[in-house]
Image (cartoon, rainbow, N blue to C red; front, side, top):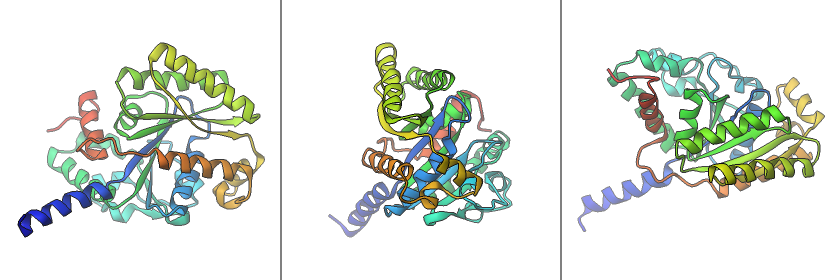
Length: 290
């Protein structure tokens, strides 16, 4: 084999190895602790030695910067407008987690030319190739934008609580992903449970219904019980895993991070996550290529 062919093969293998896996943290209903879980999981991933990017894709209502206690002057919209580079909008959070605020940037894609969209994709692909994991904090609900993000991720973490409305909306999210033939892994975390027993019961209810009516397997990511320590940490703008490192909540989140890391497998698609997002957006009519 020639040196040129050997070099090309090494580059291909290197690209495959470096490509970050993407975890979309989502929920059918707001107020279930989705952003808090995404932020604390990101810190646990980073503490385990992974290079992590936390992308706030909760458009218009994002508050990752509050949980991570970072000041975000710029977001993705500034990149799309050509005023900042992707590197310039990155904030370094606790444990070295790189945070990016989406703002209303995704919707601005509709106003870009095909060439401008390609420029943004190239920048984001470079970021994905230089990271181990991208944690995506999506908006709540089943809007086309939220579903597009989830559909393009390698695996999804659906956050629910024992409240009937939260469970109903979580199932609605799972149902939409099933109808779109989502091929990734769908994990469920029950947050704000009164006990581990209650949390496991809620998970089993969702799992049984998903198998029976959707033929969609769900995987238990973990149970997080209601805790004043979480509320105190949010008020102080401090992630609970750092504010209360020896708490049961921190132990549960760390265990969940380990479980999700072990199952974080790249989808096998040749396209990067961000290219898949743009393609799905195009099919859904969210953006179009001019």
